[in-house]
Length: 137
Length: 370
Picture 1 (spheres, chains in turn brown, cyan):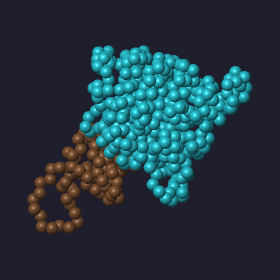
Picture 2 (cartoon, chains in turn cyan, purple; picture 1 turned 135 degrees about the vertical axis):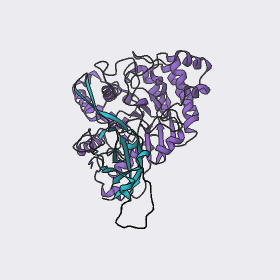
Picture 3 (cartoon, chains in turn orange, purple; picture 1 turned 30 degrees about the vertical axis):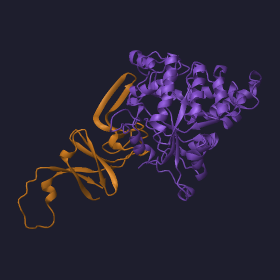
Picture 4 (tube, helix red, strand yellow; picture 1 turned 45 degrees about the vertical axis):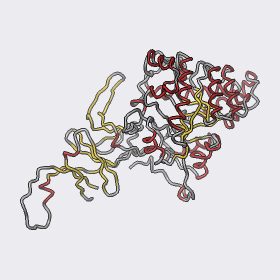
């Protein structure tokens, strides 16, 4: 898998997302609680754009009238039919055995690390302060 | 990856020679602001709307009884960037729906202000007139793809007939809409003058789910959740199909065409089998029927596809389509509502080229004479 620098971390605000065209695919990168997740921008059911999904909590209920929220902001709720997917791995909570959103590994690396390559050319001092979001496709 | 959308493509689908344009039989336009109706609404009723608002025949004031899944039951991506509610901006509807999905015609279904469920029948009649005019001025006149329906609140038959006559003279409406949740079941004689007029005019009778007749939406009372109420749309349609057939509407009006809109079609086989079986036993109770109920269903009724039931196994959907009949089904998207169906992915089972042509285009073209 090739690694693609898609954005500076500062370009995707916490709780927000941004869509990138990577190798002909629209990939949506979410920023949740300091972590980044990348998924194909397409619900596997009827193709709805997941960039418009609601980022919700996992809601469970051991019995009627008792509700528990967990993993706040980490579940995607499709903008059309409301199917829910786990941002971490694309797993659905709707018919989980059959339905999954394609997810991609994401890393955040500093510009300094990215700069190192196999060749050494004449160098000039560079100040690297930003971190970059990297998606593997 | 999903095996839900990755259904097999039939050889004949691949080999389709010409592009198939879509006729979408359920598109919801919305009123941007109530003041948009002012030019069509007498001052007396403008004042009424401002002063008293809209009051439905439900136990809840100023809202629908259930929270409806998402704000204005809309797709989250359907809010126009220019503001206003989903479905209120023609340019955005063109850009998001009509153009990319290659919609040849969209049949408008207006739900705003619930004209069918207004407590005050005169106010209901006034806004139904205003909305009928607004459909032409704001939609059909501006985009010839969009075809209007005559809204006719049937609980005051006189108002309804007057409105049907008025709109029929204008001549640009493709359907007469009544509501499945009226004061009484739709087969009752009190509603027959509307059916008689629809038959004479050659306009199909459209029945879109929703509305509140003042009764609980289920036979068992008021449900707790929206998901339960949504389920009741199918029961309501089954009850109305039964009433229309057994009270003899298709028998009495043999050229009347009836379209059930947004009720889905999964419930049709069992409802019809049961009617047939009971008819065989009790036909002396309904001697006005000359044929088995299923024969009326197969000749007088059409059903829009959305929401399509999605059984775990595609072959069960396949059987359902075969049983109901590809010539009875009309594609509908329900744009811009949350349970919108995309015509490219809505059927989780392969369709033959003939079936596709009928469901996505041919049946509606013939029925609405487009």
